[in-house]
Image (cartoon, rainbow, N blue to C red; front, side):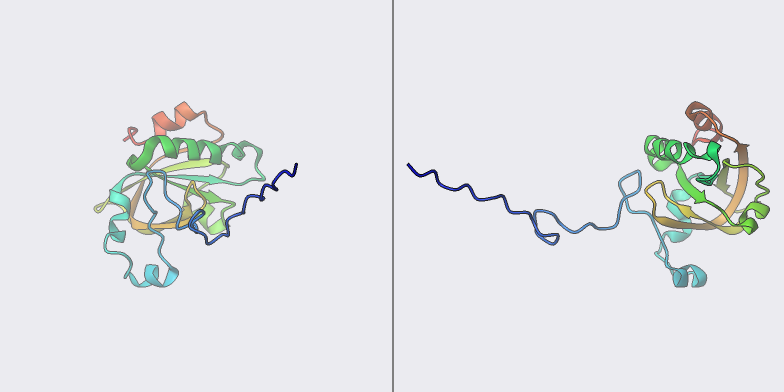
Length: 168
């Protein structure tokens, strides 16, 4: 008696309908982040709602470096909180910042957490550069006002209470 040979399962090609090519990754709320090429940022001709910078929600910026031991768990904490907050808060990671950035925001310790809100009256016209919790580069332009700052390794509940969307 002969046993029929079982064909080996076919591995789908990267472009096959079984495994579609990966599109742009999504932010924590399931929508694509607004990421502008440098030419569009410089001349202000980006997407129509780019000037609103994600519905004018607060932005939490984590300034960190992987060589600084207290900073190591902070990006993971930022990702977890970003998922929890959804669209009520934008999150940026500035990893291993340059001296000009540290001087501008008077950062002396890593990690440092900075909370910004849009403010058309007292805000400083500037761009916030960093990485989304998913790792994509993101630039948020607008009049930003720094509302809160904390330095050092912080537990999740402290970041949520003092710097999150309800912190005001």
